Length: 199
Image 1 (cartoon, rainbow, N blue to C red):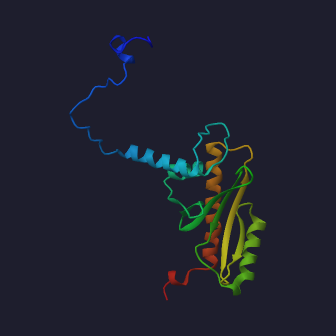
Image 2 (cartoon, rainbow, N blue to C red):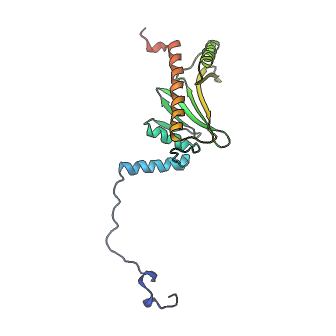
Image 3 (cartoon, rainbow, N blue to C red):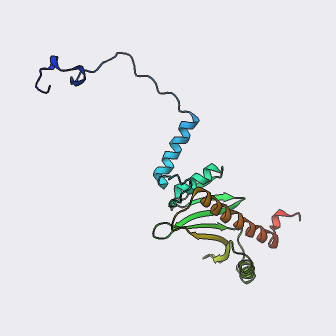
């Protein structure tokens, strides 16, 4: 067939024989909500890595799996300038980190929404130590900033060397968020916001 002249070639082998039309190209319709969601999901997959469906088998952790969990549960989240995934839970800021050589350590870290004066550092350390002595989760500690203000932090970290199923990941994320919120609620009771009460 390769040596046949052009008129004797079958129609599917003839080069340069395309149907042409003088009608204008059809306009593409506006994307539906589902198409827009798929587009956002592809963008997140490109930025955070592909989401692997775990099902009943443990699979490696990834920021994309955490973001997918946030979206499935209708939680607002963001990616900051450092590429870290965070969100607000009951008015408190939480971050979701993956540490380790293979990103196998999941850490849910929360920060109380108020600062404490440096003069109260010792008493707040006592509060954290009492919490840590009585409870497994979260680990409670403080950070002193360069400006002398004290930030109180909650942390739940889990080594998931062999990965996690979607259900396991969900339980761990809820654990980090809910126990962190319980600790911050206790701080709210100890240190009520003066502006939140009548003078």
